[in-house]
Image 1: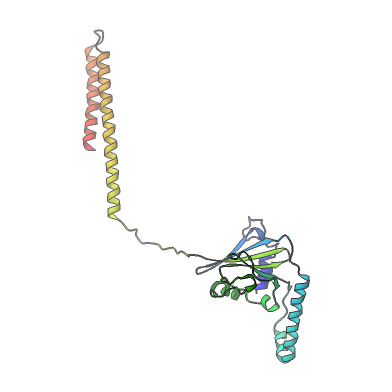
Image 2: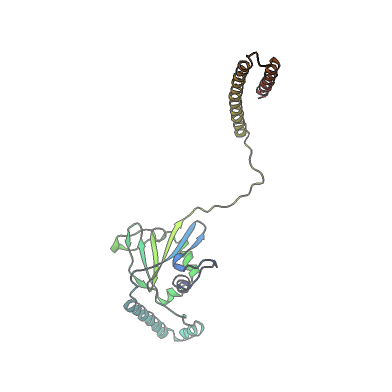
Length: 257
C-alpha cells in the first residue's frame, strides 16, 4: 500500500542500498519510476523541525473512528464480515502530506494526515493516477493557485523529521535499433577522398621542393669543399653521383604522386 511504501522505503533509515559496496542511507539516494513518457523522482530529506503530530494526528484518528462507527451502525453485518476478512494495518504510523507549487513558489495545500483508507491505498494505483491524471488542477483559491496537478507541484509526505518529495517530469524515451548494414553515402565519401588527395598533393609538392633546394645546397658545398688541389677529383665525382641518384629518386616520387 501507499503507507507501507512510504514507511518501508522512504522513512526507514535502516534500509540499505541494493549495491553491497554502498554504505549510504536512504537519504543519500533517489528512487525513480518511469512509464512511457513520464518520470517520477522520489527523494528523502531531513527537515529542521519535525512535524507536529499530536493534535492533527489525533483529529485524523478520531475522524477515522467516527467513520468506522457510522459504518458499523448502518451495516453491522457487512462490517463484521469486512472486519473478519480485513485485519488492521500493522504498525500504522501517522504520515502527513502537503503540496508545494513550483510555479507559484509557495505551499498551496494545508498539512493534513493520511486517513486510514489513503494509507491502505494501492501504491500501484497511486502511481497510475500520478502518471496519467493529466487534466487535474490544484484547487487552492486562497493561494491563487490553479496549476496542473501533475507537473507544477511537488508532493510531500512527512513522518517525524523526514520528508519524501515526489516530482514528475515529462521525458523523451529512446529505443535501440540495430541496423543490418550501415548506409553508404557515395557523395560524402567521394568528397572526403578528394580533400585527402588534394592535401597529400600539396604536402608532397612542398616536401619535394624542399628536397631539391637541399640537394642544390649540398652540391654547392661539395664543389667548394673539393675545389682545392689537395682533394682528389674522384671523391668529388662519387659524392656528386650520389646526389644525382637521390635527386632522381625524388623526381620519380614527385611524378608518381
